[in-house]
Length: 252
Image (cartoon, rainbow, N blue to C red; front, side, top):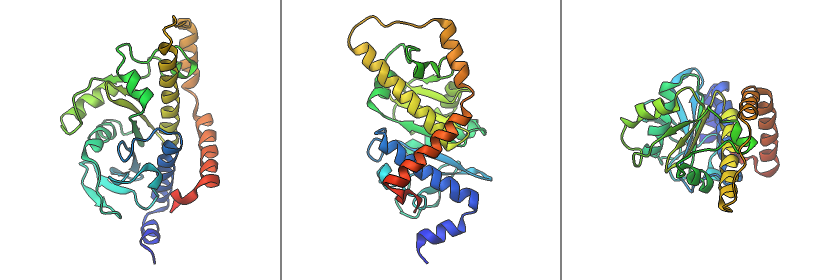
């Protein structure tokens, strides 16, 4: 029996499904060009094991992540299961563990270093509600000031404070973070946030005056997006079909 088969057999059905969904999320982030070599992370809570989490082995590209090579760690980042022997990036888990510890409602945390995300993170005004995508995050996004590479565990309290009740945060001078009650939600939010940042960078690049929508239209749009569960679920099914057509090895 292979190591991969043994690991998936040992995992209960719920954990096995989370492993497949998390691996799919890594592949989708790579597909949409939101990865950063072997850096940044997506973490997921192990079902019925509130203090255990899955994330990528340090040294694998996102397109190499599979359901069985994900690393299992505890709340302190101590490795419990690591099929690759590569361990994890400790700086990454400081950020993720802060969110998971403070928000038991959160099952998945996604963090990126994209060009557009870093650009908006470096802009003093933050994310502007100048596009429909950006309006989704109006009054629904936190901001965390840069404190250096996240190796200091004391930063976790400030990360949790700055995220507050939201499911998205801009890490100033650093990148983007989203989280969700499901892996699908965390990915959906990140794709929208990334596109909003791309649009903002493009709109401001030409130097033209940016048109700001009415406060009423911004608030109404944001409220509509608050009830997107069905759309998120449908999108996730479509995204999994995309992976099945292009490369289903994430399930391995």
